[in-house]
Image (cartoon, rainbow, N blue to C red; front, side, top):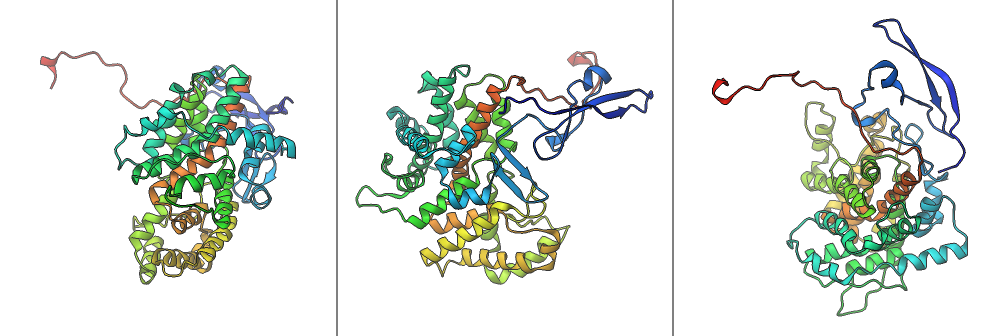
Length: 439
């Protein structure tokens, strides 16, 4: 976060109370770009009223210099850099450095950073035994949540949030170990032995190696798949103050250790309205079943009275188009082409839905374009990654965003423990009634 004070337009917004005619002057805070923000911190003390904003969709909960989104214009930038440039020219660990430290690294800095990350990828050996406490058919996100939450019991030396060195070590460990935990969760669920990471592979190569290698034979990482995975991780690395990031921040505001905060973020991400959206896309494709049923389901999607909804189309934030989707579309077709997949009915169905969404007047008019979740689900399917692992991969990518946001929050001198208020609509004061007198 910049040390420069936030520009303030004093008394720029006047609020009138129509009950008594009183007026209140509120300041407006100005960011470097994006909407201005009305400062309501003194509103309750001066008016006796709270603001009411379910879902906090019109509320700025913090000041941040990490990620900027303009949903109307389809803009996503990390530290000022457009997402398409980063996805095309960078790799995931360089983006990690950018999100955490604020600038693109020099060659010397990135090599040092990558070495640090790769030498922290191994898990404490006792954690391997910890996995065995889960049922084999446990959802991988349940395992991820439990294992990450338990990391603070294995790494006591990096839980003092007030020590910059501790925060640095904990951040490095979280980014480095998350792919190992994710791959182990997958392999545990299919009865395969855990695979130790290799320091001679890149971040994405290492993850694919830990996921799919067989101890009985040599595993060669496909460079097309590795590059696709790197792009997926970059595109999902951060997304401003979404539900899981806000969860990490509000957990951290209480002084909780970083591993507990990231575990809270994983729990929030698991929801089908958030990180589970790409999993919902594949479930939807399963429900449709075949290309010849697409017209039937398109008709259902257009019917306001029909509960069916097309998953992976449109976006809550991006009202025009999702800037990540075009990159993912290109990546999806590269992966499908490289793997030579021509006879997968589900992928054929997905491509037919994509064609209709880009041509049908209803979808074009309402700007219901395929989003990043639609294409990431297709790529995962083509790569042989099971549906239950989709949200896990999202967590692997988003960990760096959570870490960067958590660090920024800890260093913010205006940070306070999160404490939203409410509009109470329950019973007023009542006297206790003895059991014998209740009706």
